[in-house]
Length: 360
Ligand code: AMP
Image (cartoon, rainbow, N blue to C red; front, side, top):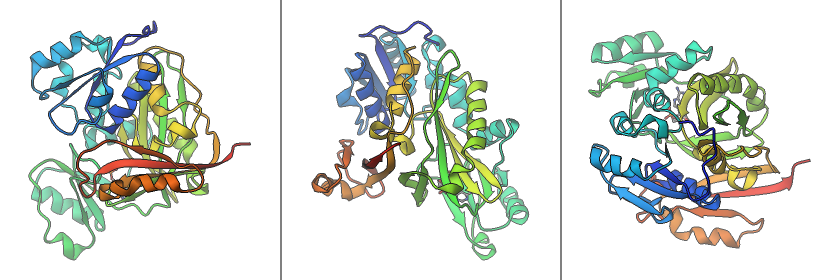
């Protein structure tokens, strides 16, 4: 890209991926007078009803990708596992962020090395390509630890916890490149979410404290507490350097563990993030709107937090079926349901944000 000249109202934004993040991006795009077109393989594409048009085609379908791209003024993604070959079928001048952000963030080894070169610290880890590598890593790093596929993991999928040396004896190399990393004894987990404009302007939202269950985010809370607040500055420094190095345009998320020895980088997402959903009601401008503003060359909005306390919880699986009951609660909870057809166990179906007290 980049759009140094703002895209006028009526321009078309292409979104690769059809999930809830695409849905919320398309809502923000519509609010700013843009049209969205989505592209994703056949499935429960909940972004589709919000988009002006939606291509349900495979990632390998080059003619369909070309037809999609020919209708777009800018193209972004809501899902970091879009195959690079699909992104390469799109003219680079249309992409925001650029392809390299996806390339780095799709691979746990690449992203860890990338941020380490910028001065970040990670949990001890080793690359695993065989049973022998795994044996060596278990000897050197020890247990407890986590074996993670290097690519294509999300929401705790492609991860195996190894609690003890005894448990380790039964674990085999899963046949695809992995990393093994030591389990971090963290005080809290937090994310740094920033937006970067094409001119290099960077703004950060406040960091929430994030709670995961089974590898999946369940709750984000502000204020994040002292353990996180004391480490946000160092983490922001890494996140800003990452964004600058990638000439990043749009919203970028880096996840960290707050530990007794400072922030440890866990992973990055080159996109809007579940831990930033609270920004819809809780910040001056949401992560979704600022992503659209950045990729369309519009002035960025403020990222200040508007409330004294904010609590965002995911609605998972069948809990969504009774979620409308939340609307009867005191305190004006903000309910978001994603319109997914099947309430499968462990599936993110929506979220609810509760805010209270104004910021002094
Ligand atoms: P990831 O997909 O790497 O973000 O992992 C999902 C979640 O699993 C993290 O947010 C943590 O709650 C947990 N987790 C992952 N790696 C580690 C680790 N090395 N030590 C402790 N917890 C971890």
